[in-house]
Image 1 (cartoon, rainbow, N blue to C red):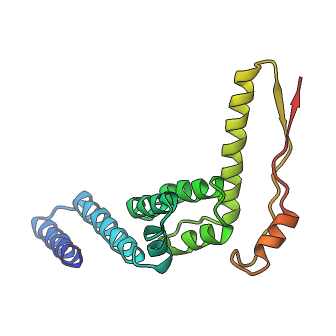
Image 2: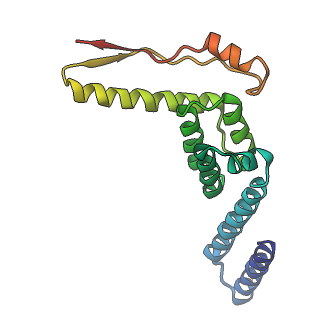
Image 3: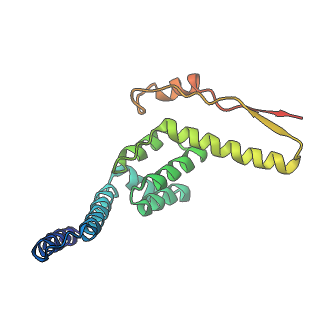
Length: 178
């Protein structure tokens, strides 16, 4: 992988040099090389995270569900949408918040994901599924949402995180109106 990145850098420099010598200013070749190089760097950084103890513990677990999390993370390349989908799945499966936080801290790149974001998406997903099932049962039902309020935390893995969350978290409540 590192050799490929080195070769790509060299090809990019040769392409730039050739463009200057020919009097052309073709930025598309350079941007293609830059995108390919960025892709390889992201892949290499992600591969480095696969040796993290948390990911290894998921992989080596006796539970099929935890092993599937490891496989999904492996295939994610630490892409934001895929890591978020995995974290939301873990939340809806009832995995501890500490594990979800660990996953988010391991993934590389600027994901801009927090446990709060993951929980909001998970709750929206559950509510959407419930809404769909209720509407199938009786189309005359309507659902009136209240709002999800999550406290902000200085450290998602603090020791009082779970107890603070359980005492401060207001979940979305849907009232069925006939």
